[in-house]
Amino acid sequence: MTGPMPGDRALALLAERGADLLARTTSVACSGRELPDLADELAGLVVRSASSLTFCHVYVLDEEERTLESRGTAPALLGEGDVGWVAAHGLARSHGDGRGAALPVRSAETGRTIAVIDVRTADRCPDEDLELVTALAVLFAPVLASGRRLRTAREREHSAERFAERAIEVQEAERARVSRDIHDGIAQRLAGLGFHLSAAERALPGDPGRARAQIKLARTLCELAAAETRAAIGGLRPPVLDDLGLSAALATLAREASRRQASLNVGVAVSGELEAELPDHLQTALYRIAQEAVGNCLRHAAAEGVDIVLAQGRDRVILTVIDDGRGFPVQDVFAPDRSPGTYGLRGMAERAELLGGRLSVTSRPGAGTTVRATIPVPSERDGT
Image (cartoon, rainbow, N blue to C red):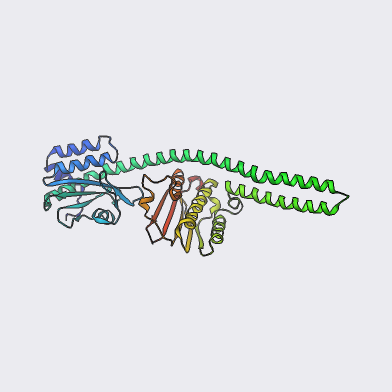
């Protein structure tokens, strides 16, 4: 197989094939097409430019760097199959039957593989065609890199729109929940409290024993109303965040999870700068992501251990929740036909993206799950 090709050599080789090839590539690059149409056009250009290629797929790595997608064929998982292996290792690889190969497309900025060109032939693939595809991969790199950036921007824009819509729905649902809690719980307790206090007032001074009994019942209702009030407030924003900060809130979350499932060992580790410097809305978002991830462990993972790790730096904070549970196929959960609220993962991802960050999920059946949220810290934190 041919190795990496310098840009000047690639241009020289393509120029030898005729100026029209460079012109066609430039035309596709300037067409304004977006992925996956752009990848389809480049794939067609490869087949038309070679002598013996029967078809070509251009697989583009997704933003989460888990799968490579190409229209008209199943996604390729990173590290699996020829396409996944090439994406993971950044090296070209011939197909086992010798009829074609998969070749990496590397970003000129980072040197990392961003796409894979998979070509097939009816018979053994000629070396000159592989050399041509290698040269085209160099030319395609900035085009596909631009397409990925545009796709990411579109996806984040759509995610922000979806998050805004869901935020309104959640807000209305939260208002309805608080209203029900107050009406069915606190309001009823206070009404009962007033009844018993009135009964105690009527019993005095002639029947002090009855008055004491009514006051005791009133005190019980008062305690219940106070507990329900604290629960309602905690549902809106955990008071421990305001009182002690994010570290203590995560520790409280871990203790509550262990109480709910005695067989589950939940640990918390915090490193880096003090969380008191984090903005309130960022602390709340990180807490909610951790809460959802731990809740998923309780509901679905059948795990024995969970680690909550918060690592803080000058410009970002990373929250990682790791469990040793049953795991799941991530690509199925994020499939377009699945419910948007599946396992709450999309909601967590949208929450992170709305803050300019990203959420990654690593899991497979029988191997546990890792949820990692990386969120930038506003520059105002440094006074810049």
